[in-house]
Structures are given as C-alpha cells and as structure tokens.
Length: 343
Image (tube, rainbow, N blue to C red; front, side, top):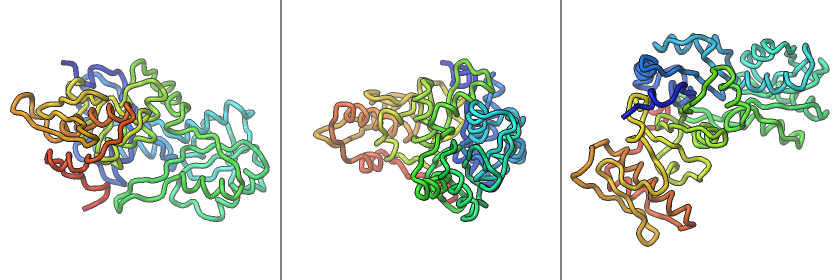
C-alpha cells in the first residue's frame, strides 16, 4: 500500500509542536522528514509563528539536523504581508506590532515597516514576538483606533514552549481588540490566506497538512479542502481529539512524523471507522467501549484511539451525547503523552 509520502506531493508541515518544541527537535522528526524526501515528497514548513524570518527558521531547522532552504519556510508573516500588499500601494507605511519576521515579510512585498503610530502608517500588522510589550501594543491600539486596515498574522491562543504552554499571539491581539473595539483580518491558519500562501510558494497539487492543533492546522486543512495528518507531539490530547467537531477532524492520526512512511490506509481515522488494528470501539447507551481481538495487525494503542474516535464521531454526528472516553482509553492501555516541554 502507498505511504503518505507516496500519496501526496507536498507536506505542509507545522513547526511548533510537530518538528520542534522551543529550541529542541521532536523525537524522530529529522529522520522522518529526510525519509519522506527520499520517497519523493517535497516539504514546506508552514508556521503561524511570525516572530522570525524564514532564513532564521531555516537555520534553526538545520541545527536540528533537518536539511532545508529558506524558501521552503512559509510563515504567517508572509501571508499577512501578501494580504496587505494586495490592498496597499508600493512603499506604504505599515505599523508592526511584532518582530523581525513581520519586518522582513513586509520588506519582501515592497512595504515600509514602522514602529510608531506617529509615523502616519496606513495599516497595522500584528504578529507574535516574545519582546512585544505594553508600549508597542499601545502604538498598535492608537493606530488601529483611527480605522486603518489591521491584519493579524494569527490568533493562536497558546504557544508550546520547553516550560509548557504559554500565551500566543491571540492574547496580544485581544489586548488591541479590547482597547479599540475592532477585529483584525486574520492571515494565518485556519484562515484561507495561509493555505493560499503555502500553495503559491510550493506549487503543491495534492498537499497534505501536517500539524498538532485542531483549531489551526486541521481546521485550516478542512476549510481549504485538503487532507490532514494530526500528530500527538504537541498540544492536542486524546480526549480533546475524540471530542473534535466535524470541522476539526483529521483524515489521518499518528503519534509523530514517522507516519509519513506508513501506509495511508492504516492511519485513517473517520466517523464510523471503528475497527482499527486489533481494536474495535462502539457507543452503547451513550457510553464508549473498546475491545481488543487477537486478529488484525498490532498497531499499538494509537489504533485504540483511532477506533474510539470513529465511534464517538459517528455518535456525535447523530447528535448523541457520549461519555466514558477517558475510561475507554485507559482500558485500552492508552497512556497520556507528556505535555510539550514536560520532563
């Protein structure tokens, strides 16, 4: 059976929680990506994090043992800059509530980044950077309050770090939103501009979105009409996945990026697909149950999660209330993965 790397021409791979957490590589990531390239799959590293320009991201990846060129990195800063470039004249001044990633992306598009509302910007762009503080947020609020266009690179509520989960750009956007009463145009995942940017830069014909977040990676893929692979190396846990809405369900489920070398059929997760490997799940009187048989390939307890999702999602689509997911996972031997950054 063909593997994912043989089935899709380009993998649009998220970074935080998929390839690395903070400065450190996720286990098996470098080797799995190299193997996918050898199988003929092209790679694009697509991130909602607008803090760094592509060359800095590429250098980080190379330090982790991943061979990559800067033009294989696609950031939400680039997506935001394209959105602005399509409505502003060349050289237009844009107030940057963020860091060097946004500055580089605006410059690439022929726009002029500024850092103060007193510089008479004609638009505002917001993106995550760890050094964004009150003064810069205030400058953003002053400018946004005048009614000029406002684009946010993304509105992720959280960001995985080596110490755990931290506030993401969504919290910075909320500060300006609260001060002005305005909402930005969002350029990053799950909004269509991000997928469009990745496809334009890669020329992908049959892309596979690979990510760790339901609300950005997976929903973005769904909204763009493409398949997705969820890996459990980031912020999404088993119970959260089982509770996913129809818009946030991946086509494939795996523990990590090694899945790119596995047969697509064995990774599939879908409503009503309740037999996975040696596991079979069902919803009986509103409670999910899972059993294990001697027949079938032993794909490990990840197959139990796939089966449980198949049963729970089908019941949810029938508007049935389901309980007992955690108990069914425990009965199948599932052990919760450590949160990103946990020791």
